[in-house]
Length: 315
Image (cartoon, rainbow, N blue to C red; front, side, top):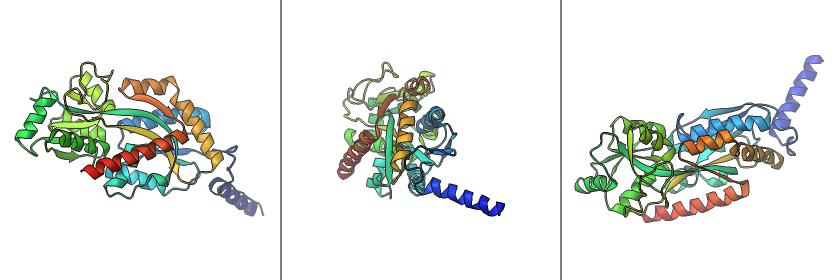
């Protein structure tokens, strides 16, 4: 009888966790939370997830365990997240590709997620190895003009925002690059540092540190205004190439999250994104700490998806 009572209790607990017993959010969470990131360890999205996770633990009272599932420009991890139970115990830090990949043939749809908050914005950059003969963006573009396809540019993978950034720069400048994909921004930058490629298009959080210590030379930043983290580095627009493109990170769950659970997680995200540790991490990498509420984030992701649909139509 004791064993039967125990089994019944376990079954009831499992049913409560997965079938809506936590609708009010009062008892959530009762166990650890997995915070998935569809990128490789060491990149900007990964660091965002790890720092946010530590801060969210303070509000939620459980461990928030970061899990990396890179590949397919983030599509592997994003699809995995979409397929999980919407119980709040598996959430993810998703990059801009969640609004981009659907326009590039991947089965990724923003409608598969409940967006719980935006937590940063990351400008794009183009950089070359420190020993590169190309001192300026004009030098690089001139070389690409003289040898179509001869300039190799690493990126975070097929379908990634940084592949799109290189393609957009080539389109605007009227040149052709050869893209070299990697599983994430960090390995793409490492390839450039090691002179395995002629250049890299990646986020400022991944190129600014290497620029500061002399391993890379950032030629331009893809923002409307100069980036404080890269003093003296011009924008592409200032150099006559009207390219403004960047990444961002949002927290999401599989669609169908109970309202009370969503509110608990949203509150934890808002608190975590306002902590000194998180803001210091974001700013030290040259990124912008930017918080948006769940409703604002949902609207923003939709507008970004529309923007990328327009860009895809121009290719």
